[in-house]
Length: 312
Ligand SMILES: NC(=O)C1=CN([C@@H]2O[C@H](COP(=O)(O)OP(=O)(O)OC[C@H]3O[C@@H](n4cnc5c(N)ncnc54)[C@H](OP(=O)(O)O)[C@@H]3O)[C@@H](O)[C@H]2O)C=CC1
Ligand SMILES: CC(C)(CO)C(=O)C(=O)O
Image (cartoon, rainbow, N blue to C red):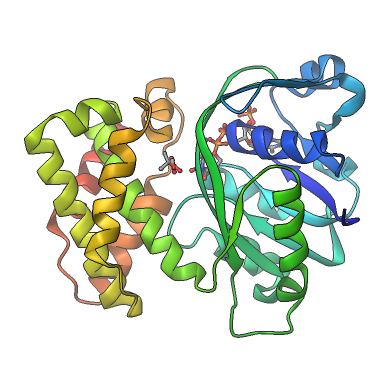
């Protein structure tokens, strides 16, 4: 097992699940928490998972309520919502060693840019998390489905960067912890591919107030989903020259049809009155497509529906 140490920045649905698995596997893992810091410090964490429930006692969780107290780690894992990224200067100030790296596990077209601006592009890794997880109470994570990660370096052309040198060890650690992690050469293409799912389902879940199963059961909504997916495919090509095959769109439709009925994170945020990740997931791709001259009417319609929902 590697000697990498990990700082989990945001112990929510995703950070609690992956960080919990790393700690359970024996990796030196440090958890930054906010609202449930005292609870986790005193009682530990519980993960209910389709792969097997587990608990980490208070002694097994190295919990921190103040980012200034985090030790400098080899890998800082950004597990905040992108809407909370304005906190990154404070959160990343102490927790990464000078030769350490930042792994960004958020959704969006380019959520790595905020961390990269702080630590340098050559020290950033990104991961696309195919995970259905919710935080259902203090220190209480419910893992409902999937969980694999597609991970890559943010600056693939820099073959000898700190990120490139750390990358194999991080992938190995995650796999050793039971997190299936697949090495991707083209993180940017992977991000566009993830948006093929996130833009239609996250967006429409709020605009239509529906779970994935309800959306998939309605032929009109399914056509709208497919149209959105094809616009993401066209945007990826126009903006970055990235090719997404039609077969991939079909795969995402099949994947969702087989998924447990799912309330997207955007829908959960909307219902709870929290900020939604509208810009990272829909606004940034919209802006990039428009700048490249690519028409994306369905995506723009979803974007304005989301902005309206956020302001109501
Ligand atoms: N959940 C999932 O299944 C998936 C999520 N993602 C992506 O992962 C990212 C994280 O999502 P998710 O885990 O669902 O979000 P959550 O809201 O569950 O987790 C974010 C956590 O960050 C914590 N946090 C925010 N600011 C601070 C701070 N200053 N100090 C300490 N903790 C802080 C929050 O604390 P508090 O509890 O106090 O709010 C919260 O627990 C998003 O980009 C999402 O799109 C991607 C794929 C699947
Ligand atoms: C697509 C899904 C729901 C599960 O793979 C996910 O990863 C997300 O919410 O971003």
